[in-house]
Length: 178
Image 1 (tube, rainbow, N blue to C red):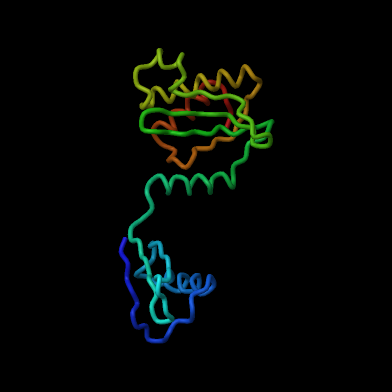
Image 2: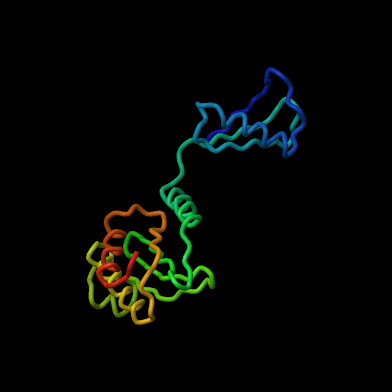
């Protein structure tokens, strides 16, 4: 991040107020050279109408931030109910987790993970597609025992590829419909 001071703008700026700050940020964010940058306008301790600090953070959001934003967009469209709960997937570097959630009650109906003690003994590495496939199959078995046969798949902002796809295939192979 870098700070740029506008010491002598062509026209004096009005005193800083929340509306002035947001207006300045909107104007600057519309410029093509600053597209994708995070902007913040602050007044230095001894601010005058002619002196404003503009902080520009160049660069893009991190992968985690992009995944979270993507997951928020997905969650606006996908909702689990009692009849058809949501199968939510979380993938970390070393493990994969899956839950079947009734969003109407905010209740987790079933869950399975590579961190499950019984599962850890059966497989050596939790960070591969074979482990994800097995998690999907075991989760499907738990769901069928509880009378859940249909779910809505929530990939959690992750690409439908690799371990996420293997988990979905395992759940389908185990008997879940989505």
